[in-house]
Every structure is written in C-alpha cells, then in structure tokens.
Amino acid sequence: MEDAIIQLTGGLDSTVLAHHLKDKYRIHGVFINYGYAPQVKEFELVKELAQSLAIELKVVDFSSYIKSFDLLPISSSNYMLKHQFLIEILASLSAYPDLNKVFVGWLKGEWNKKKEMLDQVQATLDFKVIAPFSDLTKGEVIRLGQRLGVDFTKTWSCIVSGKVHCGFCMPCRSRKRAFKESSLDDPTHYYYNESPDEIDEFISKSNVEETYGRFIKPFLEYTKEYSKEFVDNYINLMRKGNG
Image (tube, rainbow, N blue to C red; front, side, top):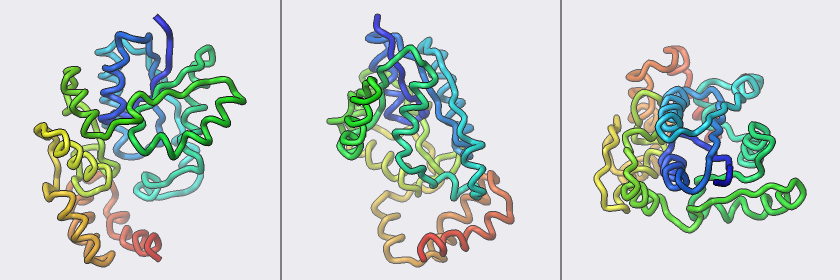
C-alpha cells in the first residue's frame, strides 16, 4: 500500500477524506496548529480520528509564529498568511520528508484558485498535491461521508469557538447550507439557529455595532473563551476591519 500525507483539520472535508482514503493508502496525518481558540476542539477531534483510523499524526506548530505578530485572539483566527495554503503544504511535506504526496480536502472552486501556483511549485520541488473532492460541493462531500459512516458530530467548522458552533461565522453558515444541500439532517448544535440567509440579510442591513451586539458579544460572553476586556474592546477591531 502506498504512503501519503493528509492534512487533517477536524473539519467535515478532511474527515470525510480520511475515511475515503483509509483503505487505499497508508496515510500519515498533519495538523497545523496556529493557536486559535477553536483549534483546541479541532485537535481533540483530529487525535480521535487518527486513533480510530490508525493514522500516524504529527503536529506542525505555527502558534509562536502567529503570536509574533502581536495579534489579539479573534483577529489572529481570521488572519491569513500570504500563500498560507502553500506554507501548509510545505510544512506537511517537512513533517514527512520521505513522502512526496499530499492529500487535501479542497472542494470545488478552492482547487482552481490554488492550482496555478501549486503547479509551478510542484514542478520545481517534485511533490504532488491531490484534491479528490475538487469537483464536489460540500453537500456532496457530506453525502459521501454519510455513505462511509462518518459521525458528523465529530467534525468542527466554527472559527470563533471551540466549545459550541456559533452558527453565524462564515464556516458555520457554509456548514448549515451544505447539510441543507445534502438533504441530510444536520446534527450540529449551533448557538444561533437562524438560517444562513437570515444572518446574511441581517449583516447586509446592519452596521458594525448592530452586528456585534446581536451576534458576537453575547456569544463571546457565553463561551468565556476570551477575556472580558477583549470582548469589550472587540468592537474597535471590527471598526478597523471595516474602515
């Protein structure tokens, strides 16, 4: 059986991908840790997945690197390194220097945005990135996962919290839409149960303060994952982001 690397995030896509590959490859997992609050839960789920599927797991720790930018917790969770996907691919290859094949859970649309740059780098460095779900939507991946027996309660999407899915961040809204598209019941517990369209409409018609007061502050106070000082000052970060 051929060896290959898989990037594991705790999310729907990489979890389904691991189940999809488990009988086809001897897969070696990589978890990229940036030190975001939700990653406590993500790592817990990744470790459980790796144990259940007998996947070797290595952690690449970028948390100190992110902290060097002196970013506050939520701003760091939304912070994207330039060419982050490429950095993560190279870090995954560094974790297993004898392997040159990396599987990723990128979906339809994601692959095309990254393929041109990857093609240039792959040709130079002699490695291969494979995205088996590059022609699938998230809803189609969920249906595949259901056929493979994936327990979706053991996957995580929220970028704000590691205690409960907030239900309002973009990944939570994407998760809700994907389950609706799949026609399967969504087993996820969300703090906010409004539909993605309802949340989109509210945000489009509201200013920063209204969005913060309606969705963000109550949720952050509920999870207690961030200090009171940070919650009180977060509105200033939002204003800067919309300035």
